[in-house]
Length: 93
Image 1 (cartoon, one colour):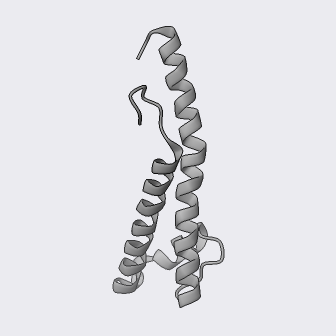
Image 2: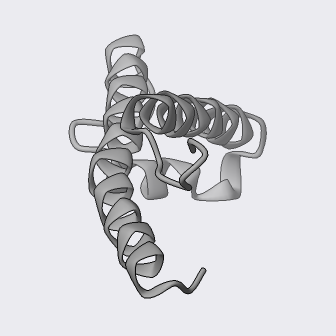
């Protein structure tokens, strides 16, 4: 965010993308350690092309996790900035 409260897309995209990649890795590790976790089904439902677990599938999950973080940033930041601008015009914060 800058001083006006507007959100920059690039830092938000990198932050969310990295956050989702770390979360994905933790979910895979949990699924490997706790075999009845059902993590393979969850990840297969959420990530296109993901199957439990091969190296190509693992990397597909990494890519999709990062892409989803950027998708959220690209959609969220302009919406947030729109409402920040409206709040500034009306004098309310």
